[in-house]
Amino acid sequence: MQSTTTTLEGPRTPFVAAIEVPGDKSSSHRATVLAAMAEGTSSVERLGTGRDVAASRAIVQRLGIEVDGNTFRSPGIGNWATPDSPLDCENSGTTMRLMAGALSGAGVTATLIGDGFLMRRPMRRLVEPLESLGAGVGLSDDGTAPLTIRGAARTAAADVEITIASAQVRTAFALGALRADGESTIASPLGFRDHTERWLEAMGLGRKESPNLFRIYPGDVPAYRYVIPGDPSSAAFLWAAAAIVEGAEVITPGVSLNPGRIGFLEILDNMGATITAEVTGAMLGDPIGTVAVKGSGLRATTVSGALTAAALDELPLVAVVGSYAEGVTTVADAAELRAKESDRIATTVAMVNALGGGAQATDAGFDVLGLGWLDGGRVEAEGDHRIAMAAAVAATGATGSVTISWTEAVGVSWPRFFEALEALWSSQ
Image 1: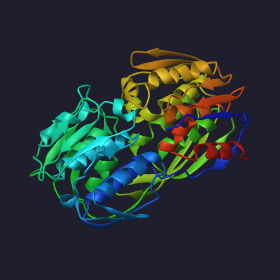
Image 2: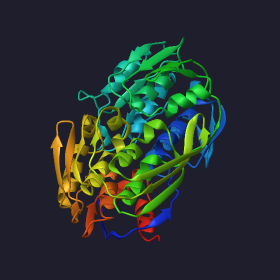
Image 3: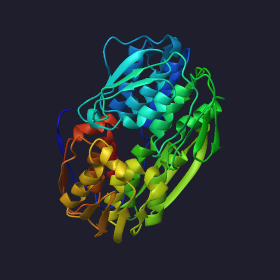
Image 4: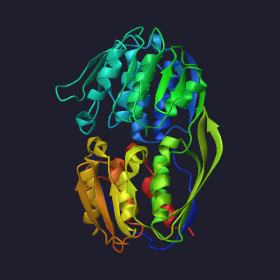
């Protein structure tokens, strides 16, 4: 990934716009893997545009799936090809974890690698769930990739409880358990996104038994037509931009309204922004709708527990919005941020302080002093797309320009993000 810099001057005045965001990254990964597991022809429409999703698409092609535009033709997971070299997940932790789960029941051995950032991220959390199914899991001594999966042709049913609210680990286990010799269950703390579990239940391959317990029925994934909704994690950057400018408004149609994905909207509502959300449809039991966010006077808030888990990817934005609010905004229970593309506690605090704000790290989060403004300055994004994008949002109301390093990183999730943000700023 090449380091580039971008300098932005925000409008600092109200704007009103309706913007369609790219296909949801989380749903795109899941649809790609499920289409690869299903025997026959599936279609995946409105696939996410970033490099992370492209990595998942490239890997399933290495396993023998024919991909032509939106069409995926698969021989079925029982007939996947054994790769003759490592499978490159690039920067995508979701790709690595979901593919590890699927490979657990594919009866092939494969090694998953990634770029320098991904190779430092923790993967040990996969070991116990996947080994309980009978798969072999190999990692470095540090618990990081290379991640080698020795898949079983038929996995063993298991009942697993994990200690973190990780949708990626829950999904990895569920994908492996679809190939088991009996029913399996997985439980975890609340706060995870449950796309996979809603989809499997709609396909007759599982059942939600309690808010945190899901039962997986072994069986074949059917070929399906997936139409991916807009990405709420991408829309969040536009929602935040509107929230920090009083009188500004952004409308985002057709986004996923999965309850595990809209924690940031709850946070904005708690801070005083005006939020409206209307469900207009669904895919496999997953709600889709239109969200409008209008900026007004903001107040500080505290984010902790399940709300932290439900807004984990958006917590750098909470720091930005908190800088424009009145009072001290506190984010707690967010130790997981230290294991992202960067140490997001450290890089979020550094971002706010570099822009003239006041932020301080804690053991598992940060505190942000709401001054009501940011001055501008230079932010070192350290290769983290969400830090680069959050810094760009901060420029919306900053009194000076904001220069951001590593802006190339936004390509992993939304390659045209800067164009979309500037279009929003120029709308009346």
